[in-house]
Length: 177
Image 1 (spheres, rainbow, N blue to C red):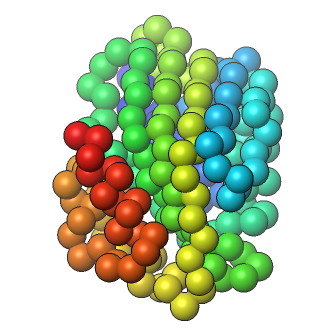
Image 2 (cartoon, rainbow, N blue to C red):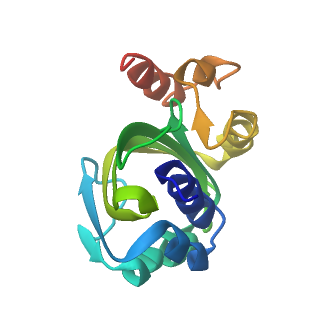
């Protein structure tokens, strides 16, 4: 049976792994995406209409610029229901420069009844930091050891890189318990 948790996991797998075809398994055909950017460090359109447009914006175009993407939903997966909000953390590298990107924000998921398919997604990007390429391996090594895609908030501090902006990002997320 399809659930919202399964749709969220499918979206993460599609986005992080550059698999746009999977978006159709997670979203309704007429799904809506709204993006709220609270930083100028990354650019996205403010909205997209339909699963094909969402796949293009969040997977295909995204994958042209970024690789080694790890998106973590902080906290436990939703057990049931058609609405779910959670904080997220992303770590990735820029294809052109190798610089790491570390960002966080909030997901607001709305599914259609019992289908579990996402009808509306609001993504808030609160911060996106660029870290010199020399630190990319350490960031990716760390994030690759964390539970994925559902990560307990308290697991973030384990062996986390001790440099900025990692520490301030993790401190901000830890305060939201």
